[in-house]
Amino acid sequence: MTELEPMRNHWWWRPGWEVGRSFYTWHITFADQPQAHVLVEHYAPVLAQLPQLDPVPVKWLHLTLQGLGFTDEIDRDDVDRIVEAARTRCAALKPFTLTIGPAHVDPETIQMPGRPLEPVAELRLAIRAAIGDVWGVENIPERQDGFRAHVSLGYSNAAGPAEPVRDALAAHRGTTAEVTVSSVSLIDLNRDHQAYEWDDVATVQLGG
Image (cartoon, rainbow, N blue to C red; front, top):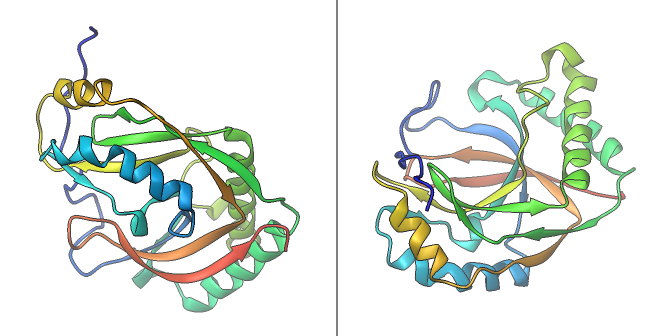
């Protein structure tokens, strides 16, 4: 088998992050999707045997689309204007079916790809355009290229070899789930408890 890159602790404090600080970001969430629940339950036995991974509960399962910025650096009026621009932009998009899975090991996570990429990328571009409507296209955070649509099932909490994680996944039948994406959420995200947790700020429907 191919030698894998060692796993890293996902929870190191990235630049700007600290306890008590939170971040506005746009996510697709799955708490209301029964098939996502089934998928998490399917892979639960794998994560249960891997203490070096922190499982993601269905409540916090997400696909990250586009960051906005730290909440203490953004005027709430700007947030509200961006949300309204996103409502206008996303009204022109149709809900779509997304297949997530099967799971594979990544240097910091167990993650599942989301396919097809095209409607997710189109939704992300609509959110970016909404930000540009308010802040100007030259001030849209993050790069447009390099986006990978994925959903993480668990996060690495320690450095170590990736082979045990790969082998545990290989011994467990891989599976996928089909979910319906009909909205996108702006959330107030924190990572104070070695987990991604959030409060909903706004939900924007696709197709109006």
